Image 1: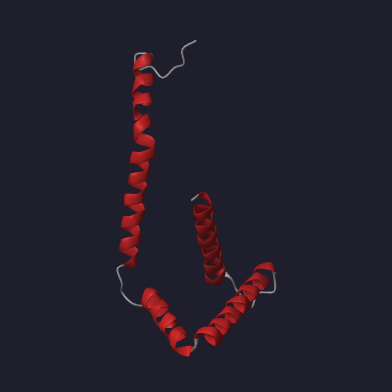
Image 2 (image 1 turned 180 degrees about the vertical axis):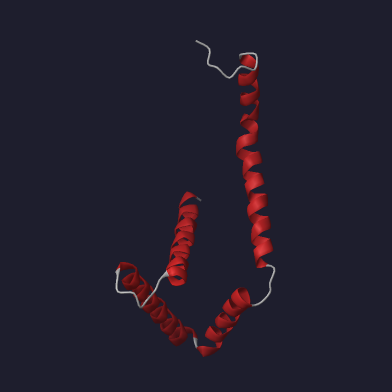
Amino acid sequence: AKFAARGMLCCILSVTFLCGIMMFGDSSANNFMGRITRGVEKLLNTLWKWCSWILGERIMNFVMSIINWVIHERNPLLQIIYIVVVCGSFTLFIVYIWPYWGLFESAKTLNDGNNNKIS
């Protein structure tokens, strides 16, 4: 489970990095970011060609229609992701923090509500 979570985190961070490069990079710039952007564009074009060759045009057109739906058309994905993040954060708080909440209350009453350390 630990390796699966780390693998998922690595995939999420990699995709976020690639999206950031594609959104903010300038491929015509003659600097380090320009070279990275051109490299990422070349990598994505190569992956698209390989997938088109392996999967065929019909499946790649379907993938393109999904990408178009997610990016350009109205859909409920943002609301769903928001609800998952909020509910997941609340669940993690309840599972991991709530059992220790009593420690804060007992520490507060230990010194009559005074936050100073006891010498």
